[in-house]
Image: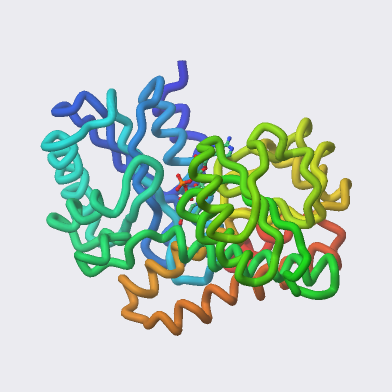
Length: 348
Ligand code: NAD
């Protein structure tokens, strides 16, 4: 069985703060992977894991990803992540009490770690945490926060798709381009509307058919069966649901020239970046193209910047991707490797 010692021994992060949360029977892990560029920032995941070590492993891995993502986004922030590994998802007073205990832990780090929502938590949870610490973002608009980051993330992905079209077709014009949006949720729903308005032909796939229908009609598009999407012919495949949809088994079946979407950890294995390159498919590295929500929250809640500043910075995601594509082409490497190299250069 993997122990905390084994995991921590092989982790390259700076600091992990661990609380055995006796009141709930769970564990709280705050992993501060890097504070080189600023406070360690990252979301708070609330989830049931098979073992506590699985929760710690997730926090360590995700915090390293945040270091790279925030370095490329150039926000003056380091990378972190927190996991509340619970026995069952709490509700009501129990949830509130857990969030307060966790918020006190965040407060004790005096700004070394700052957090927002992630899988299993949302803006109302951030509002509860804000009752105990100022180092929490992604609060509701009613409480002075930026609200749901999904629509901001969608704008960043939209700019990323245009930069990718320019790279492959020599023009970023959306008219007549077919874009398949997988996942009609917070990001995918907004993205589909932006694409539809921009003149693209939008295809929507979601396991929740009613959601797919409503997003398809709002974007003037149509739906595709969630099961058959890998075989659907399109110019751009935008994964906005789950991770690991790009693998040795799906890549040969893809019928698109571009993969550009918001999902985290889209590559099932690092080798899939090379598989995409060999197949002639341009891949927009996930952590670069999906940084819009983090950028907006940081600007609006942490730095007091305006919506106009946010708009400029979200458009900058397209510029960053252009730089990454140029580097990948010049050096004969994958776009994922070029993104990692950009992150490494900012951290060196
Ligand atoms: P969401 O929960 O609002 O929406 C996800 C949608 O995907 C849901 O409608 C769900 O029914 C659908 N879905 C689930 N499994 C599916 C499948 N197998 N096939 C098709 N559809 C499926 O999530 P979201 O906030 O829109 O985020 C989407 C993705 O983007 C996630 O991977 C998330 O981690 C990532 N991401 C989101 C943000 C953000 O700002 N929300 C930022 C960065 C990354």
